[in-house]
Length: 318
Image 1 (cartoon, rainbow, N blue to C red):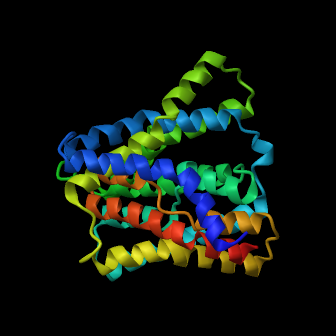
Image 2: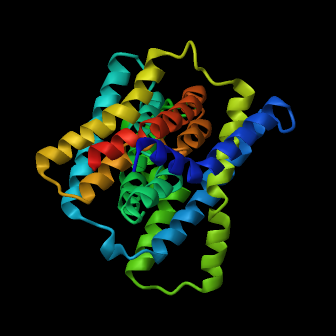
């Protein structure tokens, strides 16, 4: 399949993403819907729609078919090394705030699994099942790390707390957020074969289906109201997007080559690493009121760049 044909086929499943984002930006520009309303939509996605999606999907998945221990271990170690490097770079070079460091780790290492990688994996491999263990790793490990850092950072009202108290509070809050609780519940119920009524699964699916369009529409509203920084963006922002779309997948390719991970998991993980920053990066930024402009820009820029680079990654793994 030629690169042109690949890009053409990829645009099929990606078209709804472009349309819903563009609609949000248009409505904000025309002042049909206020850009400030994006925060309400982001809260809905973060606290209800995304957890409903994750719980339902994980409950009905075959957990035994979703894990290749060696491959996933290499992915996890590589991602954690990359996260540490981003954190050190952001703190020492750009003097970023603690919460800003956490947000950049999320932008540079986590990927848009549920709403971007799935159609791409189906197109390239005919199967999106490999995405779910990565989704679990992101939610149960990387997201917990990010939220813990976010929560541990002192606010004006808790400067009297010790670092240990803030970190303990952060760990507890991260483990009790709707997203993490939904994943834990889905995995536990699945593993224990606890029956869930069909009506409940249908309801979860109904609510979960709103997660992607609502989050994307909220992002479109925000960008439409504030504008996207194509020019004048900071070196911090541009290097973060470049690392996400080029550096991280190359780092993953090198780690998989060195450890001798065979296909098809080698191809799965390289392509997953090449996916854009997660759209809930913007949701987290709004929730914690941290670098919202950077988050919105990073999500959109990494999405566009990932689409452009997709044929190159396919050539690399073929």
